[in-house]
Length: 334
Image 1 (cartoon, rainbow, N blue to C red):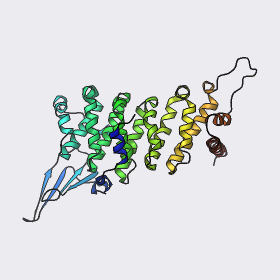
Image 2: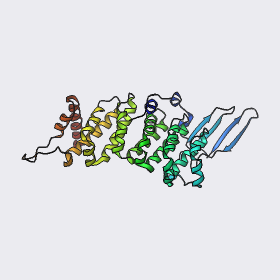
Image 3: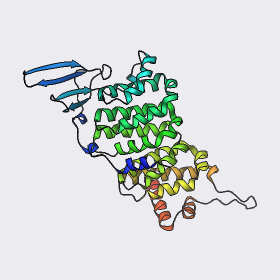
Image 4: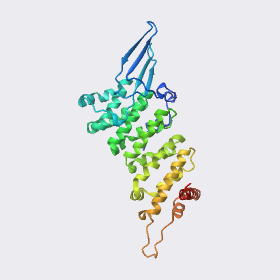
């Protein structure tokens, strides 16, 4: 069950997260330059800002909090290009304080260190993983785009490193990733979508599907669409035996509920899931209904009969129509 805090975060989007920041523009510049305008003296100073390591920058933040406007350029490094930590013990001691820092540059640097720990020294994070995830959730809510995107990238590395071990702490992360993937700020949205894909790859569908189901009924259609896409990606990983164990009757009800949803992404995800279930039902004997050994020959329900037995009349008709039309289109090559 989701906590009240998770539900509140899902339905109330901070005003600061709706604004467009200059960091949403992708740029290529020289590394680590902080520019400070001095109107009184008519001079300009350039300082080195240690945010991350060398490759080209692709993000920019503007700080207007002081008397001088400060432009800080931030790099987002792919996981396979992150170098190992130079001092593991010292970095671990400073990790939680850095994640709780109000200095956003230090926060970004510490988030990248969490990523490095996840890649190179995940065992060192095991005992403090819950605290780390709580602070990453806080960073996901940060109005600064650079912090938010770095936190999203951190989530993806945590999912890959810890897999099913994150399930007890997943709810607040999932809420924020669904929110971020549903926003208009493209580069944040794309990062969140990638993190959700990683989530469906690295966390077992048996554990993940129950976490996703409540969001299929969320009042925000974009949240429903993202959740539908996650469900559609997760179910094939169950395999035939896993689908049987989880309950194909439950899965077909989940898929049919999104078939007439508001956004095309939901409807497309529903169709893809229904085709997966249809294929599994028709090709795998383990999904066939229990047989009466006295019958000769044994009776097996068709896909159409199975839909009619497990769905309302209207839902069954819609599912049968969609799966038959889609299958005919695939056969004809359309």
